[in-house]
Length: 587
Image (cartoon, rainbow, N blue to C red; front, top):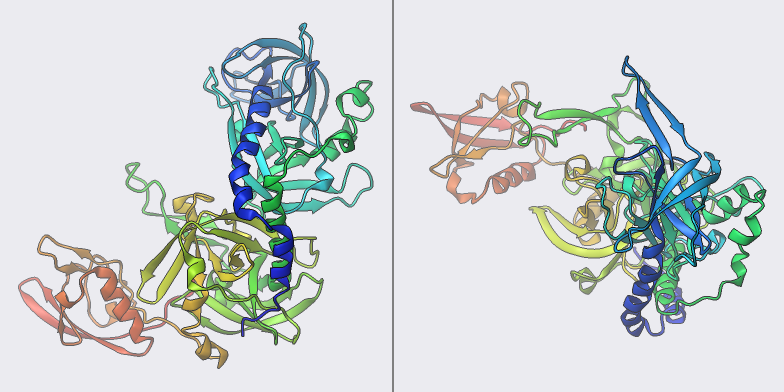
């Protein structure tokens, strides 16, 4: 059912005629960007701040004009009652990076909180300082390379600024006239507090924006991505200054220098736009009073004494992503997007062409963590399936999401990385690991190859514990989903059997010991107790299961309503139990 016309091949042949050769030249191009931009990336702080830290800034004119964030020159103080107050000074210190370390005095020309930027001018005598030329954010494309640089890490003696390479993940349009096309740039390049106020560059080393911060709002579909204020919006905010024409020259005068990186950028951009119609936005409404938190393993467990083993964290509530499976209205998404399933009142599917359609769940696979949603349509566009060769470690993997609801953008939410590994997480759950940066709204979206073939559904596993954008993202392979899709197409759920036990442990004799048992769960009702030692399973010796995971997989495979017979050792005696497996509780 996953078929598509070969038009993408024609587009790629036009865009990447010499991709292999181009990759060899990209290293020199990125090195050139760093050689030029690093010396111009500075630390900016108030003259009243004698300690470490400050904001990052970037010199944009050889006469000493510097752009930074709106917190440049901030001073914080605490009164006797402990109340913290913030203010800004009009004078600043500009410190060049290593190995130069020269320090200059500067004045604030204008601070603009709306764009989160400050323009400063060095007042000490200077001669032709290193600077970054200005580009235009209006020319950016989703999938284009993006480089961020930070230099204020609070260490006092900062070394050379740190560079991070990513891509333009989303471009948010402006409604107002003037100030360029975009209100915000989201980047997959790493952004942290030390990057705030630093430059955001294109592959040619031109300034396309100033790093504002990273998205912190748990409800945002762009959470953890870097936020960059577009340079064209910044230009407009400083247009009334006397020095405007000198400091902000017409970007059309800039001659393009990048050849090699542009080839791969074009490929990314083509794939992003071409796959966008196959990735849907899914909005879910739930009954009033639905619990909006979930319990996760405490990230501090084992590191800090006395912390509880589990903590409650807010749930991401959408919008989510889905992938077209068949032209006649079938869409795949991850089960994670359907949490609190019994509370769901409605599902709306938004397509990239602007259509919004009511959807309903046809069936779910609880083993492989995906679901099939259907809508009334017969003209959807599936993606072509990837091959086994496409799953080789090291190949490009592009993550495509659609969090835009009924306001579709020109291109999807996009990040890139590689296939990091292919794992067997359990007997029935294979997974593709990728370092393509994933955010909550991309879960259920597509992981595709550089030629636009469908690898699998994007999935984050325990991101609160492992860390978001930590390089630990997964995808459910299409080949794994196809094992149960015939059953789901018939409208029948595929659910694992549920025991109601904690993960067993292994004692010094290599025997499985039940560490905890839920009293009201299927195992607890059948009489299983904590500290029971497993002897037999359905008449077979427990040693038949080489690992605890194998035993758990075996139990799950029996399915709800099936009987599992156990023999256990309890104290000086033994007990035989018949457990009628239940359905897993809704998450």
